[in-house]
Length: 296
Image (cartoon, rainbow, N blue to C red):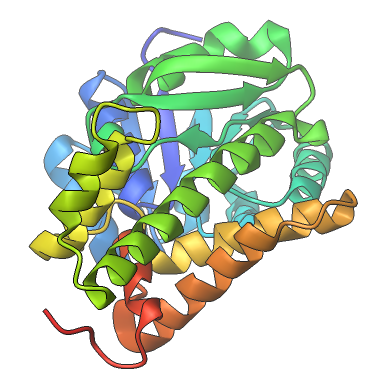
């Protein structure tokens, strides 16, 4: 395989589009597909071929990268791509999915002669656009040099968690990391809502914790997004955060762990989405603290 690859990117939402763009800018040929074609079209300016179907997108590809909504969507789209797939293609699966989905995807790969790499990423819109994601990867050692150029294009760091993508070791680590991110996001919204309800200036709160172990740049960033009206475009959308929170709750249940905070976060994201904030940044879970729009 040459240093310059043909990479098929299936799914060009917030993360997939940024990853496809960085792969193209690294000098690789990109063939992109998205169910809503308009979301993929801007990639043509970066030299990407925009395909009408998954099967068209994967034709001639060395690597197929999936960045879709959930595990079920990934399997459905890969089924649609079957006519264009050929044995030996490297499949980089970056969608945040359930642990059980990894085994199903690996079985699909085995059935069709694909080399499966589980590779969820840690990061949101800004690091994705900057090519500064952290790639959590699992897959066979002998093919890692071949997928390294893709990981290098989209990320600043690759952390290998295992040699068998079917085990879901990368997904397990991603869900643990996301459990902290989503809990912190929900807490940020609640802190701001409570401060407003009690007539406390949020800057007083920041002054209280500033420089100490309770201070947190992420907390400040999310509260600033809410206060400054910077919830669009989303770095990570409310609806996707709900999906991930429910994956986390399910993973806990399947392994004998009750995750009350994750369950509550999932419900906050659901309520915010029902209020019309589903496509906004996940910091918009703040609005779930109110029956009506909060007073400014």
